[in-house]
Length: 183
Image 1: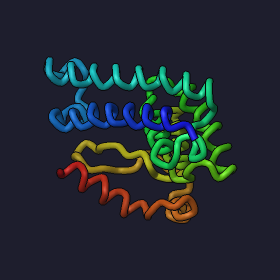
Image 2 (image 1 turned 90 degrees about the vertical axis):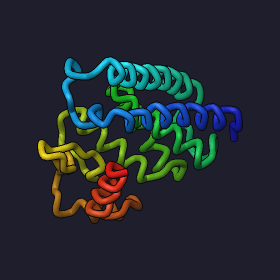
Image 3 (image 1 turned 30 degrees about the vertical axis):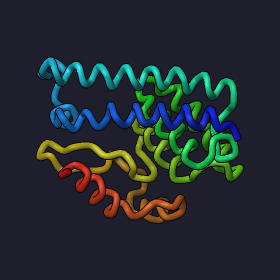
Image 4 (image 1 turned 60 degrees about the horizontal axis):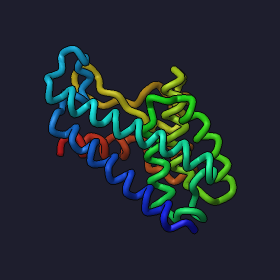
């Protein structure tokens, strides 16, 4: 166990979450408004978020180079969740996310990481690559403001796959996301 690394990951994810909560002050940022139509305040909030993500991505690359995937044995359950979330938000570096997915998958097989986290990162990577997601964790906003899952492979079996990795049904997840949006 590396308590210093665990504490650092928890601090980084707290900063990450603070930056994401600031998006709530600017709902247009999550509604697909083109960047050129954003106000100065919206642009600043977005730039701050991107800076946080870039710094966290850089640090996670260093962590992975030094330690491999930071799983339960190294950083505990909360530290492993923090590491996953930081990588989940490294969208500006899809090759890094793909590499992290490989490491996370190995850790899941070894019992050192959460299969649900692997499902989320799998979908994130697939969607970034223009492919269909497997677990239905990645949603988008429709033109009328409704939430819908990004394209899914074999949608009739998605709830079976979700259950296999400890996730609730797709409909439960859709409701959770809608509740979060409505405040």
